[in-house]
Image 1: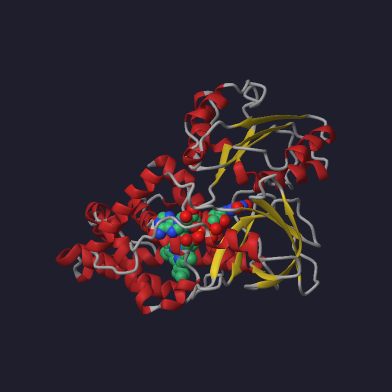
Image 2: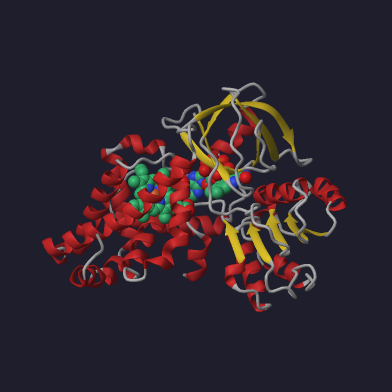
Length: 438
Ligand SMILES: Cc1cc2nc3c(=O)[nH]c(=O)nc-3n(C[C@H](O)[C@H](O)[C@H](O)COP(=O)(O)OP(=O)(O)OC[C@H]3O[C@@H](n4cnc5c(N)ncnc54)[C@H](O)[C@@H]3O)c2cc1C
Ligand code: HEM
């Protein structure tokens, strides 16, 4: 049910106004939806709602879709990321009715009289075109999950510190039902669900699988989010922006920003969960993965910082375990001890054509989220061989804080690497590619 010319023009004509009030739409939309459907708090990450990241990601995708209405194929990779995230969260088809209703109401609030019955009809159609694309893809993903529907119980079989400071901890997880686990693609993640004392709703977070696929167990590697490491000035700026957006929407919950407290789930997992305890996971998913079914000798460059090493470690372990004959370059940045450094060096001995580079950043604690100029210098020190620049088919997988990925991406771009050779994973909400385009 594609939009006809007139409908797509009606939708497009409203875009400048909707874009201008994007922040307001996001706030009103979620405020009213969660007020009327509090059960949805069980899905949405409160922090991403407070910071506005989640509402912004959704609204900007809808608006990008509306402006690309005749060339939707351009949005396919972004939609794939969203569909994979939704499937990981176990989002159901019926919930699209709810989201559509409140989103269109928020559009009406912004457009006022410009939201004529005709415009509303056209927007409803546009929303459902997009919703159908997502639900269609999600149905396909759910079918591929076979009999693992929704949440599956896992026991923490083993817990291991990966750094001297004890701030990065791996958990070996075994299914309580004892049945074999599906083999995921290295780079994919699960969604984990726990209840945290004092919190009314279930807490859901994604964690990358950090080891090669196995039918017996999964491994995740969790970094303690200390909260206090936030860039204080930046967080104050964010707080002001959010507070003013929220007050203009007369919202009492979104925007009542607390001083940055430590991360809820990571600290709970590290401090309160022990061997033998039970947690729940959804089926592995995600569009950032190494296709190990492909027979290729293209060089592979794996670039990571901090705990974002996790999905790349799964790729590396798989390549070595499956004896995949591809040249591999491993580039890892970290503030203190690089997690898994000894393990990676050991892998390098087992892989016929592997090089490694470890950077120790010199950042102060207050800089930790920004990874600014230091890494620029580190990238400059990389040789053409470190990045396999002479081979135009080399593949690059990057995972790290946003600024780190931005610098890595710019560095590769300056050296002639085509964007389609580079894949990013972001440990947050929204697509990094979309931020690159902004
Ligand atoms: C695809 C994917 C893969 C991931 N893989 C991994 C992985 O392998 N390992 C890993 O450790 N993590 C991973 N993550 C991140 C993980 O999902 C969690 O986001 C992370 O563990 C922090 O969760 P938390 O509950 O501890 O922190 P949260 O409670 O969600 O808090 C996050 C931060 O927000 C700050 N904050 C709190 N309240 C506010 C507010 N009102 N305004 C602004 N800021 C606030 C907190 O101080 C904290 O620093 C991944 C994420 C994604 C999307
Ligand atoms: C056309 C409709 C929809 C669009 C365009 C959309 C878009 C998005 C986008 C862009 C993201 C961020 C993905 C990422 O992190 O990469 C997202 C995440 C999410 N979506 Fe949707 N979505 C839609 C419908 C729904 C529905 C029906 C639900 C069910 C309640 C839902 C629940 C969520 C949740 C819980 C997240 C993760 C939020 C977080 O981790 O903070 N979405 N969606």
